Length: 139
Image (cartoon, rainbow, N blue to C red; front, side, top):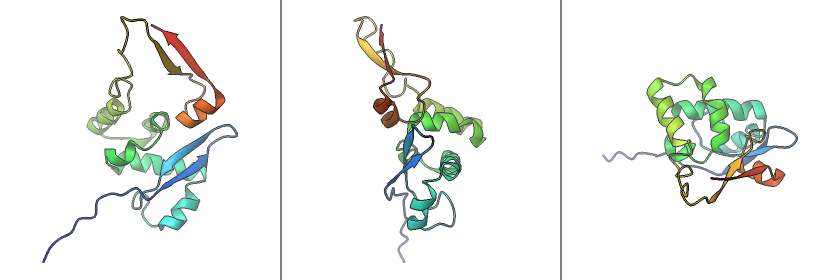
């Protein structure tokens, strides 16, 4: 008898409005919240409180394949509430940092212009680009 493994699959994305100005895009993965079906999960994740709980549970359980689909700034806001083991927290903090994505240190000697997000728009790259709150910093 062959054993087949079902690996985590992203079943789509849902947009959640977390404030009047900001919306985040969350991946839908069955199994992070135990009981809802995919259709019910699509509706539930539109609520900010459920999206926050889902994100915290994702930080605790989900593999990097799923976590990398969340807006990094949203993960940064939720990581303290997740009460992660120190090793997992350290790994996730590194993976969502600018250093791991090669955004720091590029062009420092050339004086190239690098984009920096402002701190008031910490929810998603989509929301940041729509509000135009990008701070250009010359190194």
